[in-house]
Length: 82
Image 1 (cartoon, rainbow, N blue to C red):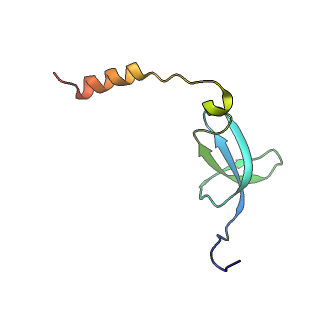
Image 2: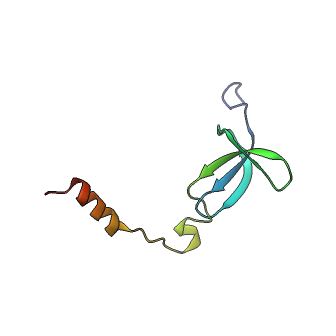
Image 3: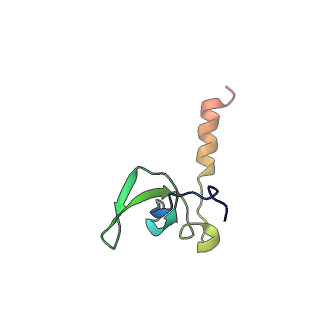
């Protein structure tokens, strides 16, 4: 392999899905300032994510309903014609 093409800072990082409290440990180069204590007793960098395979509708088979009517009403109140 060529020297200098791959990052040198691979390390174990915990990714946590904030929508369903699912977390997994994997290697990554992501930069983060937060840490978390993992099941093995060690402390690892923490990267919070909004969606994972445990919360995405494609994998779960469940569709999350979004309140689009409320969003449209808020938009019209703020920017709508008077």
